[in-house]
Image 1 (cartoon, rainbow, N blue to C red):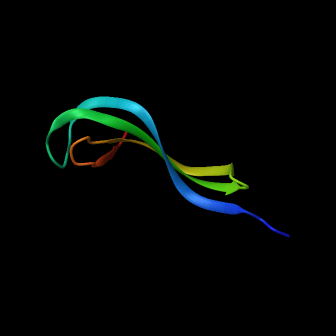
Image 2: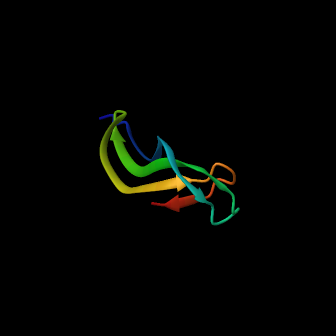
Length: 67
């Protein structure tokens, strides 16, 4: 029997986020909204997704802040 399966972390770009001051670099910029989750795939088809989180990334230094 031959199975093709995988386990990995995926990130999706959701578009522009809020304009806020970054806690690390202290620049005020428009953040980028992202979604991240872990998934299990069988034959390249996602079967299970867990550990979902929504966050915004600073466009200057790349620091992620959960929303």
